[in-house]
Image (spheres, rainbow, N blue to C red):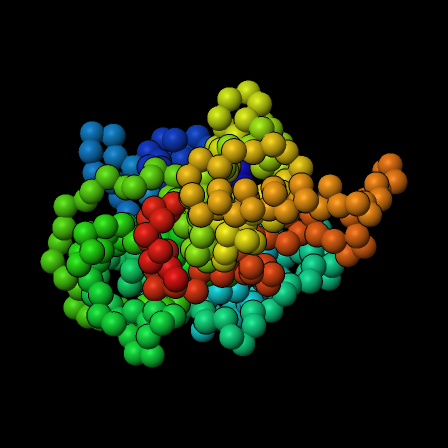
Length: 371
């Protein structure tokens, strides 16, 4: 039989699982009588743990929510996960929690067993985080919790929104549905009341106003894959020129060769793929498509087709020049030349999302809302 203190810890560990335990079940697990279980439950309550008694034909116990946070028991993997999460939070995209995260991490590391402290210490020592730039706006925890509560309660969200074109925020009202964390930024998927369409808003440009608006009836999401919906919107946001291109290689191969920010790839058969892409100009997009090293067909955008015809004639004239000297076999690109994926057609070389817009609009909708 376990000693009283060890038995209490074991009982607490069982109660922290998301289920209800009957007295006989706990007695069997702890190898004690049901009377001892009742006494141990009373001890936990005196220590501040809100153990609720479940009424019913069988009855039982579960750990409830109290007015204060009691100590928690974590297994090895949970402790490491919490330590990693706290370390990440000290330099993350949410403002105002750095000091609290560092304080909690210090307390946790002090009580970690040596074997776990060594694992967490190795991760901290050999991991380098890129700090957020001064120009990167971060989100407050209060803003995130306010938006999340409005999503949960299905209440219209009223907020001021700063677009990249305006010097002053504009008032917006929307039905909020999901928050999406993408890299260092947070995005809100919502139904815009005035525009009667789905929009994706950058949360760091959003200031909620209280109180919230009236409750609303939920609509079907624009895409069940909300993460993919937002990533497609982010990828398309910087483009002034957009095109659908049928590329004569399998989608798997094309996806492996291209970074996410150049567009969205869809299968179009066993050896073809449909690429939704774009650039700042038809000239840039035409040159970049020529660097794919694969045959392709432009499905739309007559302006792009016209420029491709111009380039085709220009290249043909260069080939027919009298002083043309064939390149030696195996000659590669000029030193410092770019390959697809090294220089992206959108013109953003910083590696950021580059949304820069009022909102992202519906992913792939082509409404240009983000420019």
